Image 1 (spheres, chains in turn orange, yellow):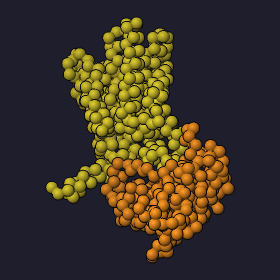
Image 2: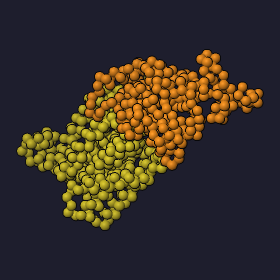
Image 3: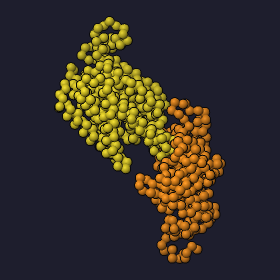
Image 4: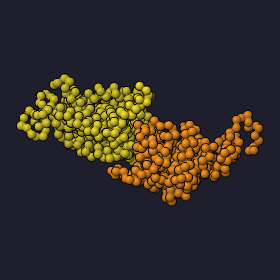
Length: 268
Length: 342
């Protein structure tokens, strides 16, 4: 496995967010980190992407400590899409995607043929090629997120990490983004690891799920393994009924309002 | 007009400069050159632009023209160098701090550099003028560090940085005034340190600032893409392989050095470093490969205009260029402050 955290302690200033966290991102799969607010899932993802140096332990990428690997080299091996994205003023889609080639270019060199081809390919697979001359700030939420994913793809890495790529998006756009990531995994063999906060979306799209609570990994496995009503109660503090999705057969958690909880005895 | 028509027009207008930045930038450059010759020819004695041109290329025996050029040429060259240094400094600061209000004078660098430069000249009377730029650089760095320490409490909003910068500037200006009171200089020297002026500058001033501009400005232009990447936010920039903190520190150091060199030769000229990058971004968009060189050209134009207006408004009285830029820049700064504060 290419990317793993080994006993890491994560902290901002003096505040410890995660204690002794060990997890391995499975290659060639779609993994999802999930948990309530403040569970440390985004912090863990930032550490995996070398954005936050662990206070203890280490993150290993291709057998080497990621902190000891130069940032430029890491950027050629894994791409990270942060949650908060700053769109430069009136920038075209194509220009934004070109930023993905930054780790492969030096200041004085003109772009190579490989750079051009990779950018074209990234726009093709994300269906953003026809938007290339449009300004990014004029696009729909889903289109814009596809452009950002194209930027990550242009980095040409097999590993793609995303921090809540569907937050603030309407449900149609959420599906648009997650369908694209699923397709990238299936057709391009990309390893995708992302933070999501919706457990039903996670169950639908993930091959592997990491469930986090107050900075520790509670459980991990396939959606069928981890999404039980006990885990949902323990981690999210919600009573729910877990049923198979009528179409996909994946587990679906249906939260219950107060009046219905009495009717449900235990985890039936 | 329908909204799509307005939008289409907007797209056309913004893309004209973006599609042909070289042509537009070339025209700005030509304008600056023409203005320079005009600036050489206006003054106490009237000499035609043609005579001035011949005198500059050394192709005349007209003594009046030669004298005018000898006195005015350093001044016009300085307008170029100071304009470039201040504008590029401001452009880098606005890009690196991601703060539309950032500029060498707003973050205190200008007055800090002025105070340090003046202190050195007064403390060691015989010191060679070439030592002034490094001294100003130290002063500028101290001021920038002060603003950083005072403004940063878990991140700093643009307006907070501006307010702290103004306070730090005021403290250094008080220092400059104190030095002036203790060591009465002649009025024009005092004016240079307080408001900034190109009056009575010689070729030695040009040579003081020239190496800094010649070295740092091309370096910054080469690093334009790094500035663009920093604009994507710290996390994405780091994700794209940019060592964010290191790059940011080096670029800020360059910006402080450029502004300090400008202050060392022309005093504390304000607002050019704030306004020129704004004009550049308006016309050429936010990509630094276009906006930094064009900010430099706007800086030159602003300095040439400010100097010419200062000389031409009430001759033979000289109004310092820094006063002209303050009169124009002050209201613009207020407008930005209100817009950014919302």
